[in-house]
Length: 400
Image (cartoon, rainbow, N blue to C red; front, side, top):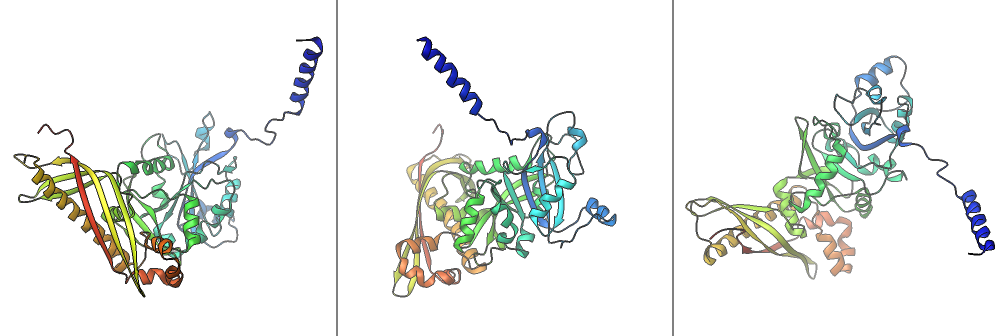
């Protein structure tokens, strides 16, 4: 390399260092309160809030709801001094609660009681209690969150049967409930009782479409949590109107083709012994049929899997005849699940949360334009038939 080129390279490198800037507006994570979960409940002021109010620390507001903010505290010598009423010994999180009528204002109120500002870039889960969402629409409750650029649209949204605060609590040392709930959704590949995750972005799309929808339901007991069924939200009001139980959610997964994994249990004749089928794959198709002004649907379902458990004693040989008999029995069990969820959709709540309207819109757009305004009501009177075929490919690792 010539002397001129060497000097030019050194000069350009020095110039580059001058114009290369760092994160001049950055803040160290140790100086922030990173919140990973938000819970919304029916208003109930804490003892802390009541005491502060008695001392003149209140501000103009209505007590519409109580927000729980789950904070992952910093690690360091000051950690113990930062623990408030929301933290217990051995916990890796803090649950701070405030009551009001504006979620944005509540978040700003935390600046008056914590030395570190809240940062929402890592929010994982939002839990809304079904009692609160019976009273207020999700559009109202989540309006600030949907507008806030700090919150990622991939954030998961759940509904709780009990309080959202309970859903964001844990008795397990070192466990962060927001991370735990986010992780359970990932088990959908093991069970068709888990609803496909509804992110903030998907929820916004569902609300904007005006169609009814579901949110995964979480139950809490003795400080532990379980996903069970789903909350039903009316498209017109965006409010909670009821729920599907586990069996009904299974039935819906067959209709929508989401039953790619999971188990189907039945009781084989003549002794009624337990037999269990493991789902390996499922193909489902909702076929809309239009004749004049009459609309109907036919659901065609084909599934392949394994016979994974057989309690016959002495064990019945897995002959072709026996396997075909079990296929029919498992198909009947699936049909019962489908019938149960169809009754819940069409008779009890009169809503379409199975995607029937979407299929009608795709295949018959002109018909859809005529019925989409009152589709939930129209759907409650539409005939639906279904055909289920189960194919047992093998019997696992049986030694027969």
